[in-house]
Image (cartoon, rainbow, N blue to C red; front, side):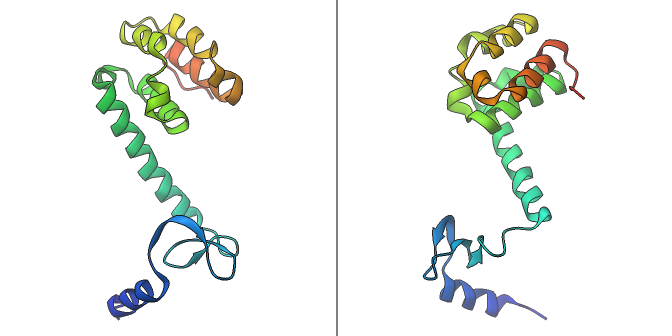
Length: 140
């Protein structure tokens, strides 16, 4: 059974909104009438969104800092995590940290990561990520 016509009809009736909005009943809604207040999203949907967001963060990191592709997996993924959290424009403001990472001075870079407003805001996340940058190993 094909749902093509039904899909087209529902999009026409509900609209296609790529950002959350309040529907006529006052419910937070997204997409094609997905009621986030009452229905939410499934774990599979959340993981799919996460996988897409990781790809976006990775692509932004490589676009702005192409040399990061030469890093080991853990340090590269540490920076992807930071882009995911901060956005690429805010990570780009970590000029000293990024220069130290580029030069392979991971110990001082890790210290610089902790000496930031971001570290104060995210607490344990910053501690874990700075340790990964320092050691090149995932924190357990």
